[in-house]
Length: 477
Image (tube, rainbow, N blue to C red; front, side, top):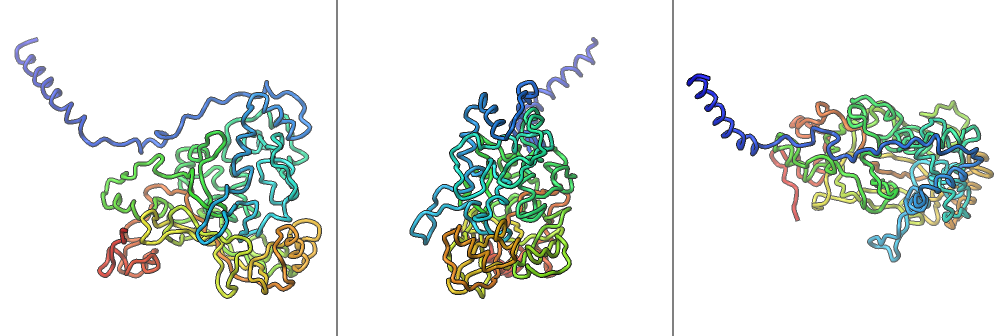
């Protein structure tokens, strides 16, 4: 090596020595560009085909076999809301006694309630045989392992949560593995009586979505349980339709840095605006979702269409590509509890989100609002829960008075003999169907002088658009 080359080599070494510390302390690109950075590794699948070899006469027989190795699993499920369909007692403001709420006793805008209608509603219960009020929740072998773990694609539950007669239980048992979208979606995509009815951001399009429909599932191949993780069969996540707290919730910041954006102006929004507000610009992206259900129109002999009218259920309105409504939301909600008095001339809120501009725990969230007309007692001034399914039910007899009497026997709620219909509303926060970054809302979608912004700033507690003269910043307590 000659003298000149030696000096060139030495110069390069000196430059590298000086640059390495500088490069090291430069801001680093965070792991948010890796969608799997914060997601627990999926455990290797255990092939059960050589372990499940018996002829199983019932779902309970499969569960009994599962418990030989998974001794605690059934007991763990029995502590979860997937089994109990109710919350622990919660003391709510203004109520003298703690309240227990869940699918077991809540009223809703759809099929109204499960009491007296158990066999039809409990087809999605994580157990077997719940057909009436006497169901024994303490029997471990009634836990349904297959509903969450079957991978055969042919496992279907019917009334009372029992396997359909043509299900091959041995094939299902041999196939078990980690829950798939099909396992979760079998119930959660079809709640309320059909696909895309309830949520607006959960429907059958998520089985095999494109990136446009949901970036997590479509582009990165996430399963439901990658976000809704579990420990001892306690799934993370809450639905304010049946929950009164935000314990064990799923948050975008479980994986994403709250200061993710390159533009600091966007990062400054995080304290007041939920990630979902910008990144879920529309809901019901592919499948139309039910927006209105009018029970008062039921019972007429009219042309039927499952998206417009059914004699047993009344009239519907479905919409696709819906623009959300926006409200402050702190993760909890006020709930209508069976027996609460109503003003029949006003809209009764079944589950209204808590939060306002003064609540520093609240952010602006996107919601689907579902409206309905459902039955109430004109004397006692509360909503009623009729029997719709089975012998004597409305779907059989088309007799509201009889349906209410039978429903009231189950609920213990007195019926005066006089009924009418009133307006109700339910709020469904939108958190799935996250759009690709390039489809997220832009500044002009919410801040514009043209009067076409999607935010109702006055309703949110502002004097006007915060980015326009006359607006004001959010109040901090």
